[in-house]
Length: 113
Length: 116
Image (cartoon, rainbow over the protein chains, first blue to last red):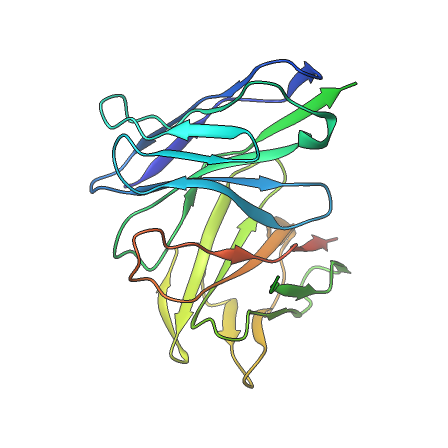
């Protein structure tokens, strides 16, 4: 079945540091890929998405590229801020599945001033 | 921006008690979901609901669980007789349609259930 493997956390960075959170997936079809973010006390919010190979999703300075050859969707940001502190979830959606989303385990990011 | 709202934000209950978690999805959304996250583990799919019936459910969603859309706005998850292992954060989500390539879900903030 479908699965998402995500970089273990927690990750602690200083402000303005470069961020990479690794995500790889296994899927039988051609899934859409997502990064969701959960700020403290809030729900899961869509951060960015990519629906086909070589697509790059981007939002708020974050980027991720759908790499079919390596089955990866790594999240990157060039310069993190304290306000980026949150839990980040990689997820996939197999077309036609009523389940909609299969999640990774989440990565806690803490950015220190 | 439209939101999915969930109540209660936190509920503590005794083992064996019934619990109802409530969700108000976005008003023009047609597909509704419950997911859960046990502390430190993955967010797991429980059930999807469309057109007043369950579309799909996971192996977690056994006979102790049920969902209902009792009126035009609420979507509830009932756990009939809670067990310790039901302690988790429960997320409600909704989606306008599932035909688009992105299948974007909007999630609520979650209801934390603690079973003692």
